[in-house]
Length: 108
Image (cartoon, rainbow, N blue to C red):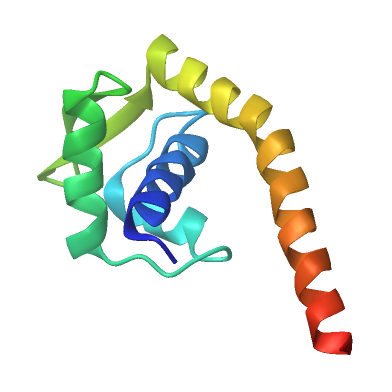
């Protein structure tokens, strides 16, 4: 898979994981796990990048005597998810065309 495409999809997966309520790193990994494997070393740079792009915010709170970072989606992050969902229909048509053409080639 193209690295830029994968990077963008990972960003969207993280935003999707926190769209309904704030969450923290380990929980985000667990929430995404049914769809793709992601490690902490992959997740935390994504979270920093999304924070830098103002697609999420971070707050720190104590949990069981330790500080934990909680991530929340911003209005800009919600808009990015909405844009992707709108773009998805076009991407889906392109994907279906590519797969259909590939099936035709396999038949010959």
